[in-house]
Image 1 (cartoon, rainbow, N blue to C red):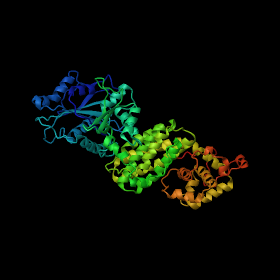
Image 2: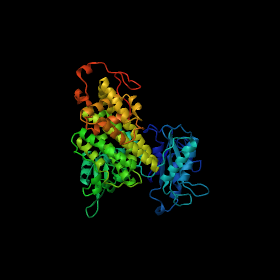
Image 3: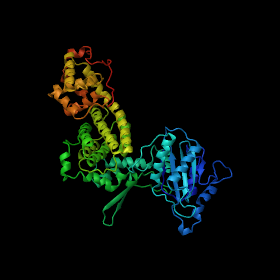
Image 4: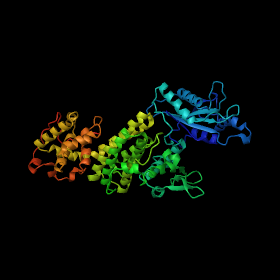
Length: 579
């Protein structure tokens, strides 16, 4: 259950008109009062003799009783209270009880003999109500509604438990501001999938990804088609900015601008500058931790670099200082944004959803120490500069490799937040990980399918050799790996690594020892990508000559050998296991 307290307004009748309007909005089907301050307020939705003016005048009466100069300019308090989509439909009586608890908890009408404000609760859809109050008490004073939003959230958590509703993780004030009801309905009228606020937030987030200066950041915003207003001090120093969509206009036909801080707490100009201040070349700690890199190059090269940076970041998040871990988690959000921006069509939606879900997980009250996250920020920059990737070949295969490593990084971030008690961030990271799972399946199907077929065609002695090697290197996980369809892809990769001059047993022990594998859904998949990255093998094995994996023409013509594993996958079965 989500209470959403909106900024105070000045037009009681205008708000009531919106709540009772049925012609414009699909969910305004039966507007009516479910509760009010006195239980007897006129209801224009059910009483044919009651009007909106009657209700407005009743609510505004304590305000109008004050001398004109004493009336607050913004006297209209408004919150919506929305149930989770999976919750059962509540009755009017239940919503009435919820409304009374919310106005009491927020100080709008505290009860227990204390003077309160006049309010009504309007229901015009099954899943939510709107509470409207005028912020002058019956005895002419201002109510104690300080931090009413946080107080409403706390009461909602109690209501959820008592009514057996979906329990929302408690917040900590780091979430981005939700779109208001008016913004959502405006988006619906304009045929937008998202509100202007949400669209601007994503565009600004992507513009920040890997940027290194104010100039580069604002150039990217302009290139994305946003309108920009900058705020400067008398000295000329830039203090802040606002952005708007060119076609998002107010009633006067002017663009609606949003300050960066109103899009998300970490999108204010000072917070954005913290990211590239850590990229300064004179930061010795940052230089020491920066991973080797060869430049952005192609999309495939950028994705390999992303996999390497994510691999190192997992260890930092799991074992590093909190402030440094927080920086890596924040930078992981930039990498997700960059990967989504440059991904192929078959993975783009899931990667975009992963980046959007992880957005809240990238922030917490643990202040990030920037600079140590340079490798991840550079990876994000390389992804952007490398440009869009194809969904096939080395681009597609290295995309699967990068997603595989990022899945473990995002999962590590979820565990880190959970240990710190950051419930909403942990939930956001877990949601992002699920989207990465789906994106991985789409990206990995073709390259792992090629490796699978190669592994099925290995000679019997070669397959037995790889099986023995696996059992020696990973005795605790060997039988599990041998039972996975991905075992054949791993066997082909081990053979290819040996043909390239590597010692496969030592390489396998090395990659397996870098991080635990017990929680992986497909250990073989994870080992394939780690091996191919560490041994510098092409991610797309389709372009590798067959003699690189010791398959002779006569062997290629023979039927695939029987598996030496406990379970033999069906012929033609591709490795479809998730991460």
